[in-house]
Structure formats: C-alpha cells, structure tokens
Length: 228
Image (tube, rainbow, N blue to C red; front, side, top):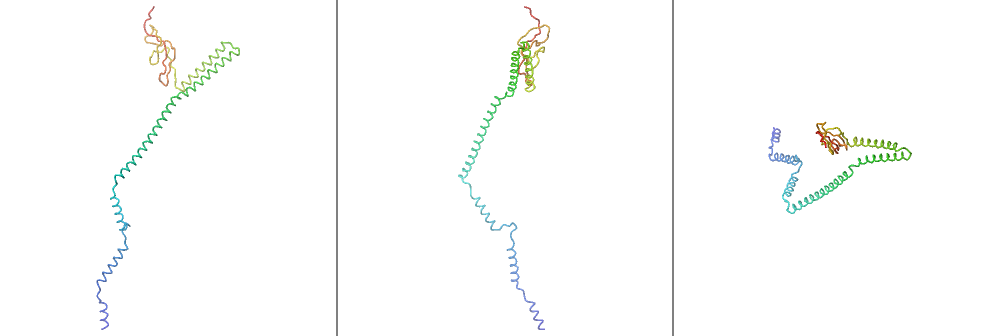
C-alpha cells in the first residue's frame, strides 16, 4: 500500500505553465529566424534602396546644367546641318556636271555613225579617182561613182531609220497638210477641188512620230487659171 501511494504522487506532479509557453516561444523564434522573405530581398537592402531613390529624386537639375545640356544639343544639331548642307552642295555640283556632260556627248553615237558614212564617201571618191587613173572613160567612172553614192545613201537612211527612228514621208500627189508640208510655191488649177502637193523640193522627216522637218513643196490650189 505504501508503494502504490508513492507512485501516484510521482505521476501527479503539476506541470509548470511558464516552462511550456517558453518552449513554444523558443520554437517560434527558431522558425522565424530560419525563414526568409519570398522575394529574396533582405529588409535592410530594401531600406537602403529606398533611401538612395529618395536622395536621387531630391537632387533637382540646376539651370546651369540645363543650359549646358541645351548648348550641347544645339552644337550637335548645327554640326549635322553643316554636314547635310555640304553633302547637298556636292550632290548639286555632281548633278550639274553630269547634266552638262550628257548635253555635250548626247550625239556621240549619232556622230560615230556619220563618221562611218564619211568613210564610205571617202572610199567612193578614191575608187572614182582610181578608175580615171586606170584609163576608164569618164562615163564608166561616173557610173561606178554614182552606184557607190547611191549605196551609201541607202545604207545611211536604213541606219537612221532602224537605229534612230528617223523616217521620210512621201509628199508628192498627197493632199496639202500644213502639219507636214511647207508651201514655198503655189499654183492654181481648175482640175482639183482641194490643195494638192504637186512637187517636192525637200523631203520631210519624222522622228518617232514627231515631225522634225517639214517637206518643202509646190502646192496646186483649186481655182481658175488667170491668163496674162
């Protein structure tokens, strides 16, 4: 009986509430010290950042700094303007030079074609002189020379038409048209009812459908012939 009473006394020792709360507080302190903010930024770093930003915002730009900044921008803009002006002046001079050269050498290809024609004429003259020197009659020499000149004229016109677009148009026996014909002589005839080209003195030419030289012609006009 005495042993049973001693055991009950040992099991019924009262628990000190201060010790239990202290244990809980110690565990809470350990948990809170081991945990970090989710963002990974320490509180002291955030405070330093705020102080730096506040100091930056509190430093206003002085008028002298603003003037210096504007002067730098003005100098840069002026430099760009001078460069653009120089580039434009060089471009203008180059364009004027190229334009002048194009005007001076515009007919180069045409002149080279004419030079070849002059070579043909020179060969024809040499051939005629050679024929006379070999004892051929003047009639034979003239015939050879005439055939050579006719061939040169045909070749030149063919070249002008195919390469340059220059064409002759027929005027004789055609109705008179002041857009194509220039009347240098006129004659009345009772046999016609409208002006007609009777004779062609100089042929007319068109260059790519534009009249570049009017044909000089003699025109028959309707009307009675006045006897002297």
